[in-house]
Length: 195
Image 1 (cartoon, rainbow, N blue to C red):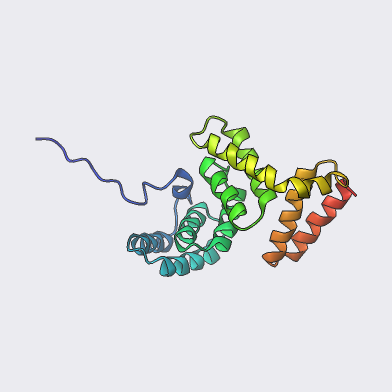
Image 2 (spheres, rainbow, N blue to C red):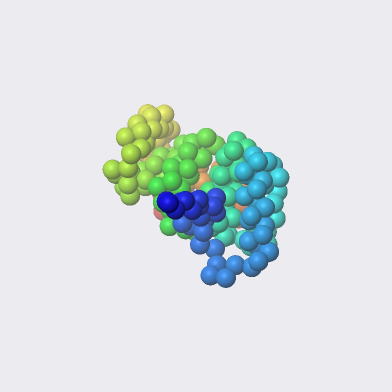
């Protein structure tokens, strides 16, 4: 008689950063994450988003919650929220290849081409032999072609035009997100480095 293979739960199939929340997570959190699993399993994305946003308020900046928020926003095609949560995830965890690809794609989809270029460059530097590296290189070439005219204008004003373009995108993004103080700080840094 052969033994049946034990099926892994959806929770154990998540990426490692999604399973590493706490050594002893609160029971309520575990129950709430199981509820999120049920909702996403039934493709009730809006209800899952509402529950995850509650959890994000109660347990801010937790990789497991942010990972689920990113996934749900992707399913809902909510590009602005997807960008918001994947940026947070990339800031608190060492970015893996999927996070960098997702972040670069989010910047591109939300019309921040210089930030996309910068993120994809980082991806290639860290994962030059990744299965999607050639695709990313083509995207970088397309971005460079599209940014060419804008960068020519910046070259006369800034020593590092790609970096300046990325900071311009970041200023616009922070302003869109209502983070005016952060936008002002980035603008001041840009002016100090390249007046």
